[in-house]
Amino acid sequence: MADYHKMWESLGMDLDLHDQLCEVLPQAFGDVYLSQENRPEGMDYFNFVVSEIHGVRPAELIEHQKKGGKVFGTFCVYVPDEIVFAADAIATGLCGGSQFWVPGGEKVLPKNTCPLIKASVGARLDRTCPFFRIADMYVGETTCDGKKKAWEILAEDVPVHVMDLPQMKRAKDIKAWAEEIEDFKNVVEQFTGNEITVEKLAASIRLINDKRKALARLYDLRKNEKLPISGKDALLVSQIAFYDDPVRFTNMTNELCDELDKRVKDGVSVFPEGTKRIMLTGTPLSIPNWKLHNLVETSGGVVVCEEMCTGTRYFENLVDETKNTMEEQIMALSERYMHINCACFTPNTGRIDDILRLAKEYQVDGIIDVNLKFCGLYDTEGYHVEKAMKEAGIPVLGIETDYTDSDAQQLRTRISAFIEMLNN
Ligand code: BJ8
Image 1 (cartoon, rainbow, N blue to C red):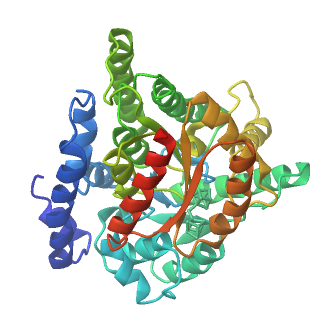
Image 2 (cartoon, rainbow, N blue to C red):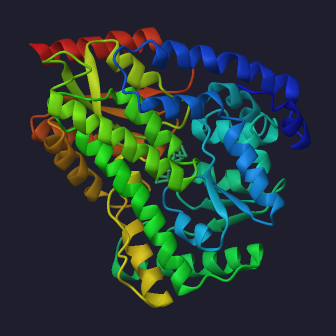
């Protein structure tokens, strides 16, 4: 990585602590990613993004701020990026996926909070992530209890706007979410000083839809019997989608897909025939959380799909582009976002339907239901997930894990045994 110490210093970061993080990441990335064989050349761009993760994109965001633009940090796939980009601002995902940040979060949060929340709060309070330093405003949501309380702590340090997400999906809830989006639009307009017009919102809806289409194209390619890309690589693209420039990201993902199309035509597969096809479902895998994909793909399986927010929940369903009044556009946004099936909703039968549908589409042999430790929502919903999969005759393995490596050996044993069972 180029030397960005001056930039990090100007962001008020803890340089010594941050240097420690910069030392471990390349090693982890090399072990998990660069050791793979026959990777598509189109992954070079995504490798570069990771190698410069705290450099190139943060520098672009700072450039944008120098020109008077604002940056909004988000933590959930329900927050509509379209509104932010329509005000000539930039939205960037902030969920923390590294154990490095967890102890910092534990200084202010109960230990039995999920690692995603602890890492996100730790990254901010320990001053070891440039994205958290750069964002002018954080946008929270009322999804789970841990997050709701975390916003109050973060708000002591940075402006936070919280969107009140309904937790049922009746017509009145979709209307209520549209009202929240309208409020968010007003906040963004006021904060940026830029008006969001119908034309600007329409362009922004197209921008984010294009990103969704590129990701859908990538995932479609994973439905092939001969797999042109590993699950690890696809996960990396999904993770980068949250913070890269949307136009560049879409172009690079489409370029990668062009190469993968050719691989499919030529019958190229990165895994031998008969490798067991695994779908992961559950809590998100924020960058740099590659633990489970690495375990599956070094234990005789391959991950072909993620029914996760770092996966299908992020890109499935497009926003209707045909609306031409602000009211209709906002309702179209609400309808699209309320199609996401997060365990914070009750009931959440749509997620079970999604898992069953995806299992067929991606021809999966088995499902791993993943729960981040202390996420009560997904843990409890695991009951329905596992029951429905058993009824459908789809083998399922439920696991709970965190960001540490302390359970890696035990997980490897369980995952290997699961894959072995699928082979028999
Ligand atoms: S839409 S999954 S991004 S809320 S894992 S912090 S739920 S205790 S991340 Fe999520 Fe939005 Fe839902 Fe997706 Fe809480 Fe659970 Fe932690 Fe979670």
